[in-house]
Image 1: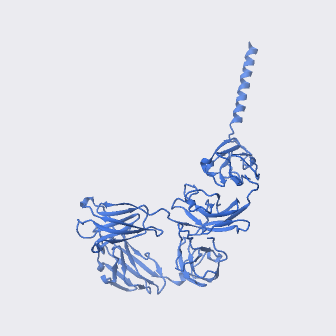
Image 2: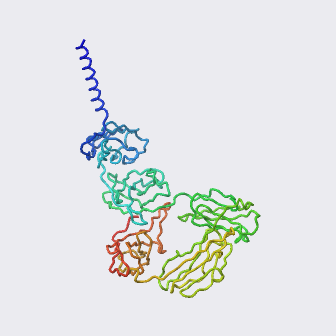
Image 3: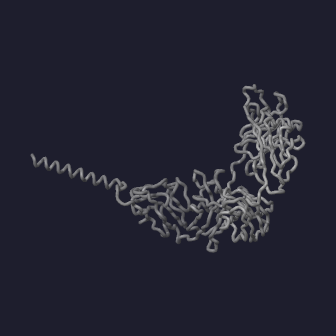
Amino acid sequence: MFLAQQRNLYTIFVFITVLIILYGCASPLAPQGGAKDTRKPRIVFSSPKDQSTNVMTNKVMVVFSEPIRTKNLKANLVIIPSVNDDDYEYKEKNNTITLKFKRFLRPNTTYVLNFDDAVEDITESNKPNNARIAFSTGKEIDTLFIYGTVRNIADNSPEKEGVVGLYDANDTLIVQKHKPLYFAKTDTVGRFKIDNIRKGRYLLYALKEDKKKNMIYDSPDERIAFLTDTLVIDEKTANYLQLQTVPYDIKPLKITTKRPRKQYFEVKANKTLAGAEVVFEKPENKGKILYQTEKEILRFFNYTGNETVDSLKAYITVKDSVGNLLLDTATIRFDVIKEKDKAKTKGTAKFYPTPNSNFMKGQKIRPQLLFSTPLDKLNTDSITYINGKDTTTCRAEQWELNETRTILYFKDSIVMNNPIRFKLKKGSLIGIEKDTLAGTDTNYGIKKEEEYATLTGIVRTQAPNFILQVLNEKNEVEGELYNAKEFVFKYIEAGKKKIRLIIDTNKNRIWDKGDFKKGIAPENALYFQDETLQKVAPNWVYEDIIVEVKEEPNK
């Protein structure tokens, strides 16, 4: 009996030991303790084999050097030419990934699969490096390629994690509907390379995407670069490209509502308005019905002095941030609202130019007051104008209101020979809601040469027309010249600077961002950061700066 019990205990021990071994083999957990695993997974086998030709299959199997797990594989696996997510299914097991496509791969096509961002090992989450295979369903593997950089045209910063894509040249606006045929992601300094391209004609776009990361241009929050001409890729192609992205507001401008609200009448658009013009069917209503834009609202105010106003027709033109215009009509009417139910709007006023700005001696300025709501009354005897040591009370004839009563202009330009100051007491300005605007004042000073630097140099470019600018670290323009082959910038503030040269193609002396829908590229902007500009000091003259245009970005 004792021996039988021993045999039973031995059998149980063996059984438990086998279970532990089997469980350990079946559960590839990260080992505890020991040196940190820094080895990166690598492909040790694939079917089809890397660089193989005449492949006919709808399956791809890849085996890695160690157990791995996928990371949102359909979003991160790069398959070129691109396929839709629902074109294939996948399975992962231990160190193997198998893709099964719904149909056989295209004939005479080179395919590239890159798993770098799609998998990681299970021990330390190490990502592979260059875990890619290439094979062809035809007789040979395509070897053509393009490479280059993508930068934000506004500040020359690299577009990190952007997408550069090639599309069939016969398609139009495909970037707004489909993924590219060939694509590559940019690295941390904006570089990209697209390999294994088939000889042909393509459209090229580069995207800095929003959070969706769908490789489709479908949001005004995205930036895009594009070539205006078809890109022919063959053995003679100049492979290197410099691309500059621009934001475009691609959402069509629409009017969503037109209705009375509180004591107002409001026309609401589907996005922020940059301006509006209104023509009343009856000209006598001009000046009696006022209007102003605020974000996506065009708001009308009753300035007739009567609570009851007959409905009146108006023709309105609204404009968005990229200059798109929309014409519409509105029948304007105002509801009679009890005083306690009216919207309580407190108007504000602010000076332009920016308060406390300094100007060069002899420079002309024309001060303005900008109002958040239309102005009802202006009491000029409460406005004091100080020029140097002279103090005067402003007269009504020195000021001019625009027709919507939202901007108050100082009629004459002021020559800045002395510091000046405007002081507006409380009660100077009464808003349309009969609210008294708070007092405000501003100082405008004279720049002192010893507190600023001077930059001098030459420009070498074949461009017949260009804009030359000095920018600070916030990308704000501190100085601007036009067609100056020899330049002198005075009154440059201390700090880090860069120079921007804009190729003024249409000779209008401003930078034009182009038009994506019309296929018009933005005017090129080139940036230069001379070593001497890294730390500009006051009361110094920086000479012999050379701005040389060797190569323009591609269009």
